[in-house]
Amino acid sequence: MKLEQQTARAITRDLLVSVFLYALPVALMALSFKITGNKPWLAAHTDPSLHFKAPALVEAIFNNLSSWGLPVIALGLGVAEFALGLYANKWSKNERILDMVCFVLPRVVITPTVTFFSLKLLPLILPNLKNVLTWIPFVWAALIIAVFDDLTQYWYHRLHHQVPWLWRFHRTHHSAPYMGMAMAGRQNIVYSFFFSQIYLTATLTYLGLGYAALFVTVIKSLITTGAHSSIPWDKPFYKYKVLHPAAWVLERLISTPATHHAHHADTDGDGVGHYKGNFGNMFFLWDVIFGTGIITRRYPQSFGIKHYKQEEWYAQFMWPIFKSQKMGSELSAGGPMVGDAPGLRVETTLEIPRYEKESVHTYTNG
Image (tube, rainbow, N blue to C red; front, side, top):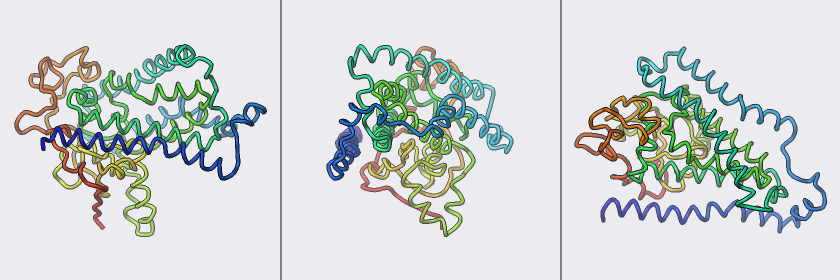
């Protein structure tokens, strides 16, 4: 069977499993209502005070985090990483400009613009549905949103690796030869514009789940920020035996530096790097379920793309609007689709033997 057919079969199979995963938290919520006899949708219509809402202190904290808090945290970590020399000599002028543009423009232009127009269009697309879901208890709302949001992003991410014509829209995030806050938001503008989380959060806010959506967004941002950091905060969990049980749960539940750094490695053949998998963003659990992950408790020695040509920052950020002048680049006019010239790294689109596995591979170094 051709590898393309294997890829299609694996995607189809896992999408069917995903339908069940999407429905699971909703089904569990309905079951809990049936067992307890609770009918919050009725109470919400008679007593507006029962509309779910985060506690005032929690709301204040997360509102600040969502506006200026997370960028400040990211900048602080970036400064710490730079001071510790974790970028070595790999942060060239071209890389700095690209990282800064990708850090600022999506937050200042793309996200606010998409959110504004989404909230203007939603009343036209979904008339009379504003605040229709305010009756859902906060905990259930947060669980449902976490699954819907992160599983959708898992697929958005995975397909950009497995579908050849999508790869170049995500390639910018993988071209960085280093890990850290500098590159955490490094994405092509097209990839950022169609990023599912922006639209989902706006829609959920319109439907009345704004507080839960905000809560999940902040928690997810903290986890993904930590996973991209070049500071290996998870290392103590692997070093001290008393923490090994917690490490076992942690590394299978959420993305950590060890598992996500493996996804950014520039090789897949050293037993540590795994750019053909480890697609999870907030939850690594999806990689466990679909067999697309490995856990090594080790960190790659090098990152990026073997055939990286240091393409101009504007080409990486604005492709295909602007193309690279680097001959043979994937981002140049008429360049190869997935860098599949002889001797170059071949992306997941062309080889996926691990996807046929039933469970996550785990290797430890003691």
